[in-house]
Length: 448
Image (cartoon, rainbow, N blue to C red; front, side, top):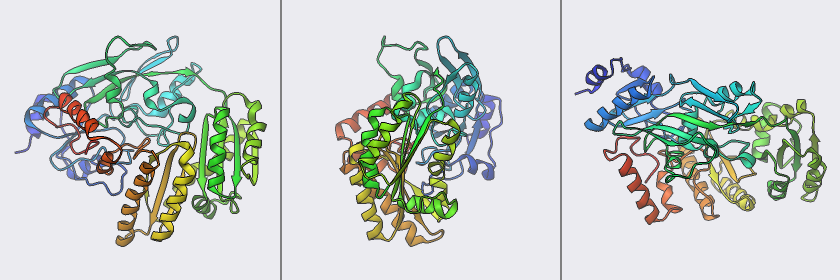
C-alpha cells in the first residue's frame, strides 16, 4: 500500500505523485546511473516539515533521496520506484548576511552564484565555484564537497563551511559547528556530513564563510607541443600561488576549434593560469612556461581580456558533447603524476579506439577525462563504461582517488575499496549505522 495518503495527512501538504513529474526529480546528470520515477516527491519548505517526513519514513522503512538542483554527475541523487524524494529547491532563502563577521546563513536550496551575487554589494565573495555554480545549490555543494577552478588557491566547499543544521533519519534536528571562524569545543562531526552525499542526514541550513572580494584577475594562456610539457610547467607555476590553473589536451582543443575556432589548431596542450594578486609575477610565470617548451604565451593584467583568454576552458566540455554521447570522469591525483596519468589514458584511447578528451584542474590534480561515443552505439557505450572504470583504476594506481569533486554516488561505489582499507570501510559503515540505523537515507550510494 502506498505511504502517500498517510504522509500527506501528517504533513498537511500534497505530494507530487504523477510519474511524468516524479521522473524529472528522480535522477541527476550521470548518463548510465540507474533510476526510476520515485513513488512521491516532497517540495519541502521548512526544516520541521523534513523532520516529520524523516521520522515517518524511518518508522515505515521508506527510502529517502534528497535532491538539490540535480546537477550531480555520479547518480548520487537517483531514486527508485519505492522512494520519497525530498526536494530542497523551495528552501532558497538567504537568511542572513553578516558583513562584519564575514559569514552568510542560507537555506540549502540557495543557488551558489546567487549567494556570491548577493554578498558582492558588501565587497565580499563566496569563493567555491563549481562549473555548475549558475544552477547548483549550496546544499548539493555541501553534499558532494564540490570544488571548482579556484580550489587551487581557496580550497573546496568544506574549507568554507562554518556550521550546519541537519535533520537526522530519526527526524531529530541537530546543529553542528559555529558561526565563529574557530571552533574546537567538541568532536568535529560537521565535516562528516560534508561530502556524505545525503547518506547521513539532510542539511537544511548552512553557515558559510565570506572573504573580501578578490581583485579582477590577471590571466596567462600558454600553448605547448604536448600535454606532458604543459603538465610539467603547471607544477612549477604553483609557486606563484595562482587562483586558477587549468589544463586542456589536444583532443579537446580540436573539438573546440571545430566548433569555435580560437587559433589553437597547432597546439598539443594549453595551460591557463590566473593571479588575483602579485601581478608582477606574470613575467616570471611566462619564463617558467618557456623553460618547459612553451610555443606561445600571453599574460594580461587587463580584466577585460580574462573572459576571452579563458574561453577555451569554458568551451571544453560542451565542445566534446557535440561529438556524441559523453561520459565525464572525475579523478584526483598528485599534481606530479598528471603527465603519467595522461599518457596512460591516451594509450587506453588508442588501444580501445575511443575518443577521450582530457581537461581539468592542473593546480590540484583534479582531472576530467571525457569519453565520447556515438549516440545509440551500444558497443561504444559498453567500451565507454569499461574505459570509465579503467581510468579511475589508472588514477588510483598513481596514488590518486576515484573522485575529486563529483562524488561517488552509485556509479563509483564498487571502486572505493581499491583505495580504502577494509578497516576504514568498516568504520564508515559504523558511522552510517549510527546516524541512519533504519538505512533509509540514500540507500545504495557512497559506500560499497
